Amino acid sequence: MTSHPPHDDDSLDPRDPTDPLAARLRAALTSEADMVNPSDDGLQKVRSGVDSTRRPWWQHPGALAVAAAAVLGLLVGGGFSLLGGDDDGNVVAGQPSPSASESSDPPSNSATPSESPSPVPIEGDVYVYYVMDDSDSGPRLYREKRPNIGMDPVQAALAVMFNEPAVDPDYSSPWNGTRLLTYSVSGDTATVDLAAPAGLASEVTRLGVQQIVYTVTANDTSVQRVRLLIDGDPRGGDPLERAPMVDVQGQIWLLGPTQDVTVPSPVEITGVGTAFEGTISWEVRREGSDTVVAEGFTQGGANGEFGEFSDTVELEPGTYEIRAFESSAEDGRPLHVDTKTFTVE
Image (cartoon, rainbow, N blue to C red; front, top):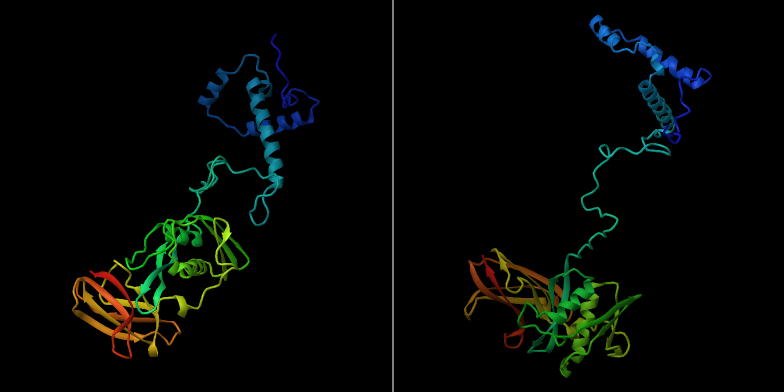
């Protein structure tokens, strides 16, 4: 005879008359059987299949297996039902987990244990300062807004400054080809360590440093000072704050329309500037023409105090150049000119 290892439910033998659990089982199942009332035809079929020994149903091996499973199910189910959920419907200790068909699908972006969620790209815009030679006051800083390339805003702005030309062809940077080695912030001071640039024109050395300072502080307003290092060596001594705007920033600069943009009419003119009595003038010409097709003036900042200015102009479809400037009080010539080329759709 082949022996079998014992099972946990081998003790559930309903044939044992001394087992109280078996007695309860017999009583329960006999009660259920008494409720069955088959038809004569059905009863005959049942009787024809009954073993001639007519042993009690509960001694039949198949019935024993079913009964054991039913009892175990009642015991297990009853035990878990005692633990159930709380008054708020929350699962508490011992509550069986829902089956796969009952549980909610996991979020589509959930990662498996072997995967890490993809980093979320940083969106938005960054501000990059460039240099333009103002024929009336020397090299000055002018700002462009550029899309973030998916990095920390300061490092993204510096990467654009070092690796990409300005959108406006009148703007340039003495830092072209420079590489950022490290960037860190401690308190209100940022440290920027750059690889030595190929060359830095002496006349824009101070302005070039302020270009870094203005760009960093424009993209992280918690930074008040910048320590600049070149290959680990200090450049400019102690950490530097922004120089006064009137000393380094373009006197008048256009923010809109931006260079090479296509816009509807009426065209919105926006910018920042300072001028005598705050008067900012503007003119629009057809591209490649000296003929003024529209002109006007608006109010900005006055006498060294910078302020925003805005205006609108109706234009026919075509490509234009707009100039913003201060009219000289002496002879009316344009001073501190900034220009942009744009298209009206």
